[in-house]
Amino acid sequence: MDSFRHTPDTKVQPGEVHIFLVEDGLIYARILSALLTKVGYKFSWIDDGAKAFEILKGGFTPSLLITDVMMPGMSGFELLVRLKTEKCLPPTIVLTALQKEEEVLRGLECGAEDFIKKPFSPSVLLARIQLVLSRNAASATKSG
Amino acid sequence: MDNLSLEYLNQYGIIGLIVFVQAIMLFFGIIATGLFLIGRAIWTKHRLSKEDEFNKILIEFLFESNTSKLNSLKLEFWQTTIFRDVILHQIRLLSGQERDELIGLYTRAGFLKKDRNLLHSRSWGVRLSSLIRMDLLLLPENREAFVHSMSDQHPLVALCATRAISRLPVEIDDELLFSTLVRVGGRRREAAIEVLSNIGTNSGLERIISYLEKNPESPIAVACVVVLGDLRAVEASNVFLQIMNSPELFSDELITEVLQGLRKIADPAGLALAMQTLRHSSPRVRATSIYFIQEVGGSFSTEDLQTLNEDLSVEVRRAMQFIASQRQAA
Image (cartoon, rainbow over all chains, first blue to last red):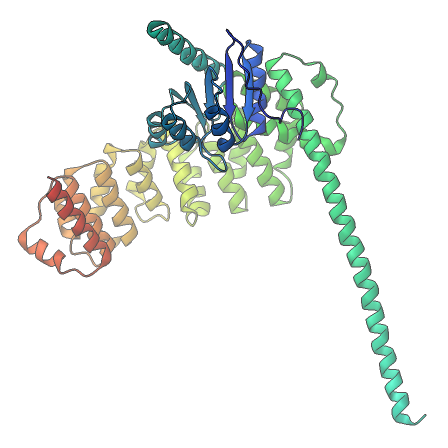
């Protein structure tokens, strides 16, 4: 459709924070791209759960995965379960329009670290991203 | 030529003329349809490219504080609706400060004023569309416009206005609210439930309880009971029991929902009355009574159990299976 829709850049440079978005809504992807690149994160995006699974299974390890739930082909929950089974699930935030408590619980059970409901406040999303990243950085330091 | 041949030729000529005219009409019809489809495809392409452009401009405005493109934006008249819809779409996607900024932009661009004016349109479709747009903004200052539209002749417009006002933290006159709901929501149960849930959440359940107490036969009584049950309104217990005291006066549906409501608030005060509705004529009421009694810890007499075990209705048999499985699990 335009230059924004392309195969995501999955090269991770040392020291950089790379956030990978799986979301079928172009506008959400644009919003997150603007928001995250503004604060200095590297951002890449794909609109298909199945393709995202292949990329992540193929060795791409982003600092954080943000995924939608309702997507054609493979749902966000299914993506998380499959990544967990393959032992390649990065720290994840689920971004979804689902509002029910059971769905939030299901997301957390599938391996998500946090859950953000749409419509979302960009500042709140950014704060949650920073929280998940610092939590994971701290646990990596501990174990490392 | 004899008379028969002349007659034949004349007849053939008329039919030929008719076929010719029809062929011409078909030809122009095909041309017109083709032009329409081409025009629509061009418009869709233009619309998509403009939507994309406006989305980028708005995102730059929100996240990169770049207002130059927005300020220099000159819209042709056919592009204003595209721009308006793009703002609304982003308002739907975001919350917080960015959403407020977009609402500010929508207002400054004059779209809100235009929406308010369109509420006086003669076409109900136009009035409804304006209300839907205004509803998205969730602005308390739209209260007066919504109140005005609650009295709209068209039920969908009035319902949309009622739903819009119920989502706002503003005062609404009870009489206007409930009379509008009865008028337009009696046959639209889901919408009535949504409005009443908003009212219950935003401005308290007392109003719904008080309305139900005075109007248990209202067309929206079932919706009121559903909402009170869903919101776990313990204070609705008295009105539920009042209805259960004379189940013969009310519809089976209302009694079923009241039992569901009592079940949701887990109120054992309804046990004695539910024992009586075990013999109700409606199998749904009997089954709901069974669930309620079981869940609030009531016990069935041997006689009741025998009668219920002999009950052939699907609902009751399913409820009895539920009881059996609960007892086994215990």
